[in-house]
Length: 167
Image (tube, rainbow, N blue to C red; front, side):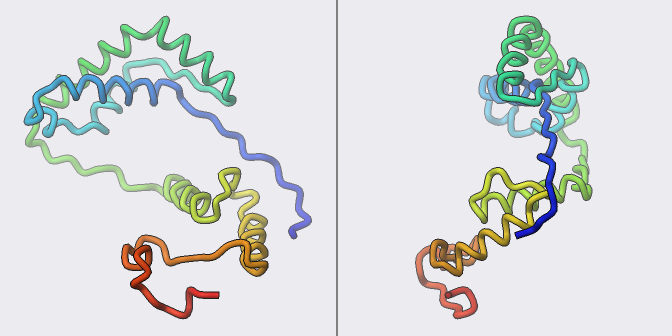
């Protein structure tokens, strides 16, 4: 195992993001299917969030408190911002939109999330990834973990055979 001391990763999240996503889903369900198919959810969410204050939390308790506060104090603002966002995005349904490319920071977070799922270690961070992989290898050597190739339906149906992936 590594002898380096690791500080836990500081995590923080904007409560408004999940509340806006929830409200966007609600309002889009009320629209006719043909209309909602022309609405780019990501644009609606970004538009609404840019018109609302951020409410960050760093703990579960803080998250719960911020959610209660947001619903109580900002519920009508969230509803109005999402309504305004849908109207703004709907104005030009044929407008070509080039989505943001995933930056190095976002890409690394996607990779870290995939590693968490692959290794079954939700507490994994970039600070302890080497230890996490080492633990997974040790558990594999002990026979506690078996592996299959990810993302291959044939492998999941046991139709895929490649000796490189068997222990």
